[in-house]
Amino acid sequence: MRAWAVGERPGPVEHGSLRFVEKPVPVPARDELLVRVRACGVCRTDLHVSEGDLPVHRPGVTPGHEVVGEVADLGTAVTGWAVGDRVGVAWLRRTDGDCGYCSRGAENLCPRSEYTGWDADGGYTEYTTVPAAYAHHLPAGLDDVALAPLLCAGIIGFRALRRASLPPGGRLGLYGFGGSAHLCAQVALAEGARVHVLTRGRAARRLALDLGAASARDVDEAPPEPLDSAILFAPVGDLVPVALRALDRGGVLAVAGIHLSDIPPLRYERELFYERELRSVTSNTRADAREFLDLAARYDVRATTHTYPLSEAARALTDLKAGLFDGAAVLVNDLNR
Image (tube, rainbow, N blue to C red):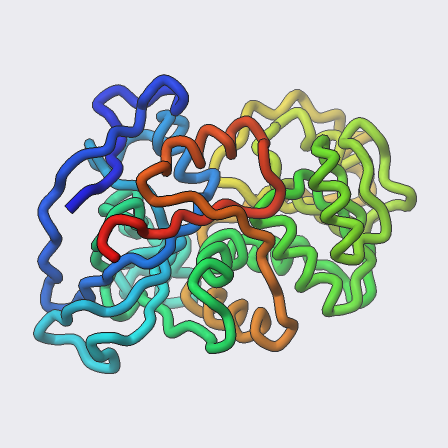
């Protein structure tokens, strides 16, 4: 089968760090599903893996962890799935299940956790595998392309929203407005928040207003009112003090990305005093995923998508890096149809 693979020396994606190669169709382990990929969202984490911002966990790994597909085969120990079922494959691939973190419901912090498209081959290919216990049943009523970005951008945005401790009817600031933020905004708006978007892209600001944001400004501007909570989606450490200064007393800033450039020195009296808090977001739990997918169906959360053939995944990542589209990109499998 054809698959994209990270090169031996990860680097700028526009310089060919992602290669189109032949790989054997994987054989599912006894607890796994073999998934025929139909669509795969393009996440900024895929860019970080391809360019080496995230350290190599598996040489030649195939990126992609927003996979919508159908079950093509079952491991011998799998129950609850049948060949032909539609299935979602997300970032969290496996945990040990019995460490202290897993035991208290914090499996996203498991020291032996594994991730799709980083520790194991992901969805930039024709077929992939997933442990059945970490696969997701998907809501009806949405097509493959619409569902794909929900499986990471949506889930991690939802966890970031909960980590930001937004009070009912609160004032939320979103710094950066790409694939994850525009899904997070829809949940926040449906739950009664007033949302202010701070982002450089004009198209992204237009999208924010179209979705119902109260304001959309450049990141160099301040929001029109103090914020109860903020989420930083842009992987830009320089924005951390900017967002902290925009918080009201007792406000919380959650940083949603897996990678962030260096944060400049923070001045305690200006950025952190009055009990402002800075929190990180690390992956997600399966419970997060289930809750978000249920809410997405209830609130009719819709991704703004731009499709690319799977055979043009490198171009999709290059366009993502350059900020050439709003919303989210989705790869549509043009290889095994």
